[in-house]
Length: 186
Image (cartoon, rainbow, N blue to C red; front, side):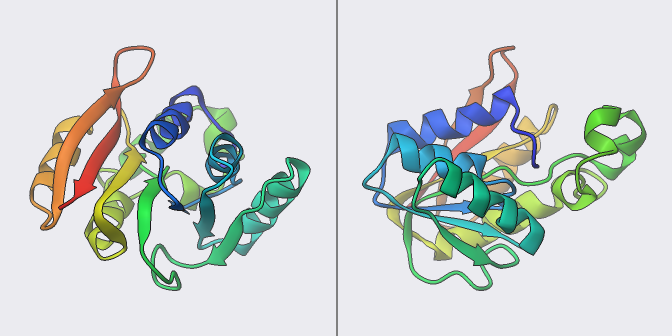
C-alpha cells in the first residue's frame, strides 16, 4: 500500500522491539516501513523489496527525503533477494477479492489493486511470504506481518503448519483487533 495506516505502525514498533542487524521489508510499497525501521534502528542493514518498479521509485524518494540508507530490490517476494535476515517484515496485500466493492473508495480507487487484493480469502500473498520466510531467516530470526480483520485464526493456523516457524504472538491494534503476526524461525 502506498498510504500508511495506523495499524502499519505496529510493524515498526514490533521491529524496533525485536531488533536485528539485517532487516528485509517484503512488499515495501512506498517504503514507509523500511524507512521508519532504518530511522528507528540506524545500525540495521535494511532492504526494501517490491515487485513494482513504480512503488520502489516512490520508496527511493521517501528514503532520500528522510536521509535513510535503504537497499532497494525489485523482486516478486524473495525471488531476487540474497542472504539471510534477522527480521522480515511485511505489509502484504490482504483484502479478499470479494471485499473489493466495499473497500473504502479513497483506497480502492487510488491505490494499486496489487497492493490491496490477494485472492478469494485475502491470504494468497501471506501464504507465499510465510512459506518463503524460513529459508531467508536466520535461526532465531523473526517474521512480522500485517493481516486483515477476521484473518487471525487462518494466519495462526498457517504459521503453525509451516515447518521451521513458531507462532509467538498475534498483536492487537489500538481497536483491540488482531492485526500483526509475530513468528520465529526455529
